[in-house]
Amino acid sequence: MLPKWDDSFSVHNAKIDKQHKKLFELAAKVEMVSDKAVSKNDVKDLLAEFFNYMKDHFNDEEKYMHLINYPELEAHRKIHKEIIQTMINLIKDIKSTNDLKEKLYIVAKKWLLEHILYEDMKVQKWRSAGISDDGGGEVSFELSEDEDADKAQIYLYICDCEGKIHDVPYAIHQKMELQGKKFICKNCKQAIRFHKIQS
Image 1 (tube, rainbow, N blue to C red):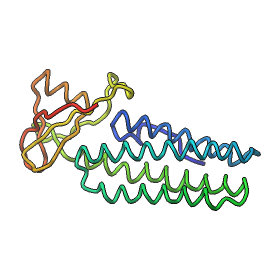
Image 2 (cartoon, helix red, strand yellow):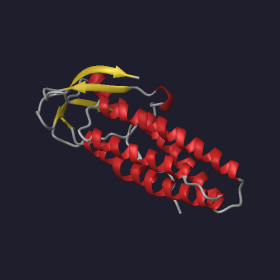
Image 3 (cartoon, helix red, strand yellow):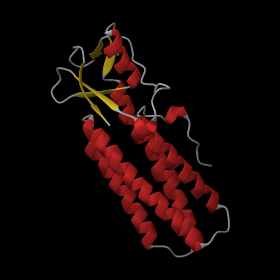
Image 4 (cartoon, rainbow, N blue to C red):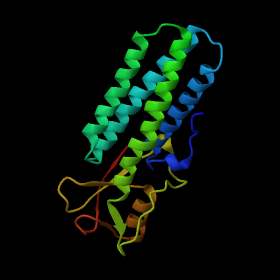
């Protein structure tokens, strides 16, 4: 049984989380058809939807990781390429509808969901480990109720570390801009400064 989306899988980026939720939904569809008699065309349609959405998501995720200068971007990109190549090989080597359903289920479970649950969570851990409040306390990266995934913006801050960009949630951005609260880079120990908003 595939896991269902819950907030513990959040990377605290509204756009990426929305895409991950959709991928969980598509994986659930894959699981559903793997246990039922369905036509080859229905399975192929689901495969195409899954594959195309996954490629778009990987592209968006890589752009986001590049934007925040994630140090493991190239390794992460390599994993994305491996998943896509596995999907391409799956399409080439279809022997029967049942074979296709079985292979698609394996890809949904093994590659995609495990990738989200493990690899993508590394990005969130790296991101949240970068700043503390001015008293040295941990910072919550929970998304606020005000953040709409369709209109999500990324609030980018810089510090004195060369090339380091901090992506902060809307709630922290609001505290800094409206309340004058300071947040500190854990590496250089300097206050982070507003850089720009990315849509």
